[in-house]
Image (cartoon, rainbow, N blue to C red; front, side, top):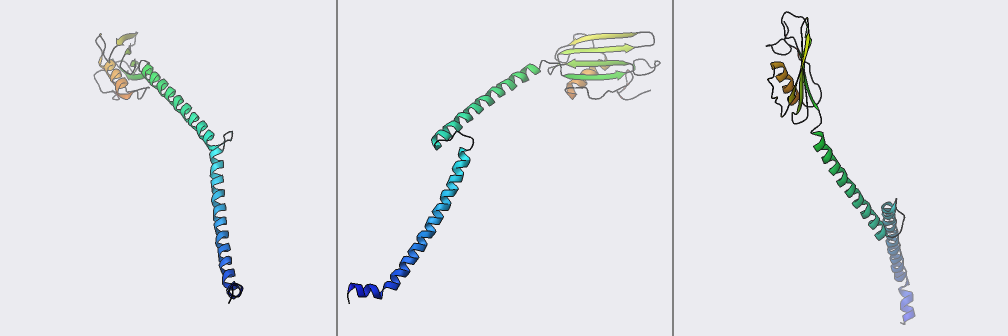
Length: 184
């Protein structure tokens, strides 16, 4: 039995083996094509918005943008800190109280208002209204205190400014010596 006879006898086996090999290689080629397509989509997504070029130049551009953004954020942070420090000295806390200093006069026409910065530096202004005259008083504040004697209502206005923070909150009313909100 010669080589050609053996080859003829086993031709079916060789054809089957070659067919299986071709099918396996076809599957591998399809798998590689799908992987390549996925890699190309990833690369296009990575390169989107750039001028093109190779991956190294794209990453270099991206890192430059990240550094620029980081520097910009640092500048904004420094600005925010400066503004925060500066805002402590701005008038931002207000305490307001209406009251009736005289039991025989009608209405809560008198008031005390405290206007301060965050540290309690500012002014307290009070107005006493009677039938004949209205008097207005102003007293400086430093650290929530005044070098001048304060009335109970002025003290309450200062307390409201200190406790309630920025802006006018509520407007209590009351007679001298009474709790705010209680009327005769």
